[in-house]
Amino acid sequence: MNSQEIKVRIRKLFSKEKHRSSQVEELNQWYNSLNEEVTRPMDSDRLKSQAWENIHNEIHTVKVHKRHEKNVLFGSWIWKAAILLLFCGVGYGLFSNLSESTENTKLSAGSYSNEIGKVSAFLLPDGSKVWLSTGSKLEYAADFPSNRQVSLSGEAFFEVVSNPNSPFRITTGDMATEVLGTSFNLKSYNQTGVELSVYSGRVKFSDQHSNTDSAILLMGEKISWSAQAGLSETELFDVAKLPDWRLGKISFDNAAIEVILSTLKIWYDVTVEVDGKGTNCHYSGEFKQASLEQILETLSFALNLTYKINDAHVTIRVNPCE
Image (cartoon, rainbow, N blue to C red; front, side):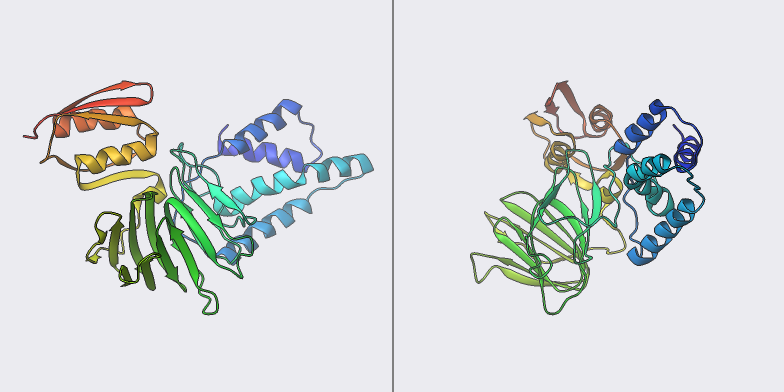
């Protein structure tokens, strides 16, 4: 269904026009399979107000004369409101590999996770915004937000609401990241390495088991930690360039073959077997809604490699780059 057909069917549900049960089922299937492009943040209060004002206007166009019709309308109200919210406030675009989630969704205490290949955005109960990357999981305390403690496995971008009386603390394996109000990207797909990039504010980054491995980062600074080497030197980066994964993109900037293959494992849930060495092989490029085979085909020309895909296992033969 295109957007116009969907709008027509939704309006029929709010009116007394007859509709077939199959049409309702199609709308339900459409809603469950919605995809979302996670884009720039918006003012949540304005978004919420605009969406509910549109819903309110739709309700007052409905005239119900029979008690039984009223009950039918109320019984389907919740999911119809959710669909209207999508049209009124958050329908920026669609990606085939992003799960549907509005930035205004407040989660109950517990956890939130993404399947491989999916990206989502949501609000924590304190109003902090989180963009969660593919194959990632965020857990937060039952007494959140009085205790703003969360744990992350994978990668996420945070816009933390300032609260001087309650620091926002994220644990990723052995490392802890503590902030008051700031935005930053945190990546830790395994327990042996963590990467932090600060886009605004001030962030404390420290090893929970060491008094020496700690650093305070400011806007435009990034750092990494590994179990083998500890903290790296602080580097600078361009804060104007937000992480591409928020838009469902896979991008490489002069990336070595090892970095490329580890990224493909994250996005496509495959195991990779490498034969040969290409120590001088680097690649820069961007992929959007591309299949694994399409990416490997591009890399085969750029990096002089060959590949074979067998279900969820990829064998790559790396040759010396020209």
